[in-house]
Image 1 (cartoon, rainbow, N blue to C red):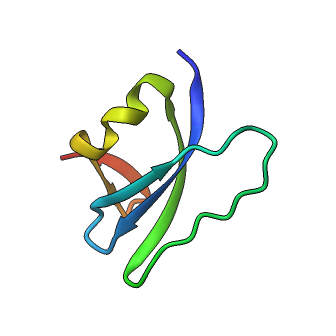
Image 2: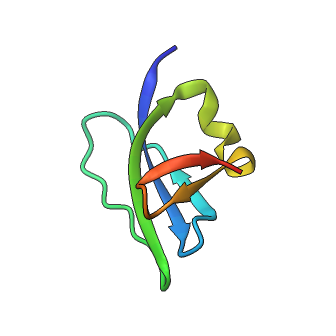
Image 3: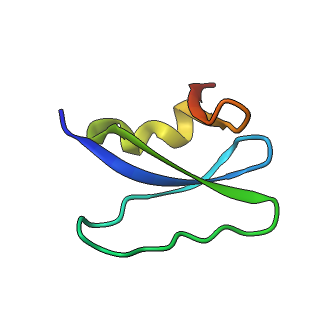
Length: 67
């Protein structure tokens, strides 16, 4: 499986608000709202669609964790 870079917008509790997967060779700035942050990581391409339901961001460890 191919790994892809994703930008994940999450709230202070780590709940995922949105997942962005920019096209290669593009300059993209992913913005977040009040009380939100952006976490950039690589994941298996097939898992991207399931992250909203199965994971959250752990801001203190800077990683995705299962719910």
